[in-house]
Length: 311
Image (cartoon, rainbow, N blue to C red):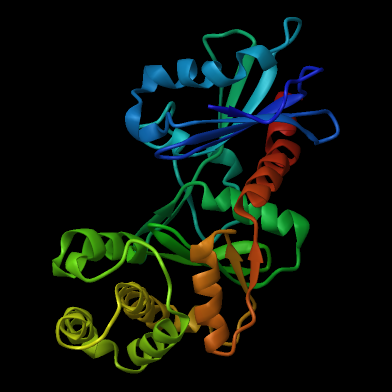
């Protein structure tokens, strides 16, 4: 558990980003300022529905006022089928918030009223998201005229097309999970380093993957072969493996990013790798802080949905 600072005044409301492995909470003042924040490793994946409220109270009990009910606005996996209360998916094309699917309920602790933002689904091809819709709402709150593609890199990377303030299409790619499986579980585990980066090798292999996507499985084995009989270093092997898998993903999403305004959500090394890949193809993507977008989206939800529901 981690706290930013002690609160000298009670918050106006509480923002929550509840993922599969972690939870982040913020105490928000009447002017929208962050008074304090805390994190926990009690994500959705390790909780039963009746354990969500106690897990939340471990972080926010000292923030709760004694004389009124405080609104808790949450996004992410807290609204999944295995979450606290299921918030059914809204369907794209639509605005980031599926207002009619937002869940409102009183917690067992009578000082909290909980609001869970719904995720989104796409019927053809089938796809789902929870959490990214709130970040995109935050992006559009800051830049209502944004049109183009939003990329949210991660274990399961999202590419989201935005037009006229709506999410019109999105696709999830298991690239990050495939990288972990190949680097940690396959024969390539003997070859790739756990950290380190070779930019020149990444760019060379990325270009090869874009040009020859049908040869990816052969290119993947060459990572092992060149380490055995050549001078491919573990760091270069890691960079090549990443590049080959990203090449497949970028081939599949070319229609989304080619010639389009692009934004990447994230501030870590992975976001910079995606930026590097796009820059190599002539795009000029911007990187946006994911936590800041989540907070902006939760604030937008409060303004557009929650205040309307409680008044």
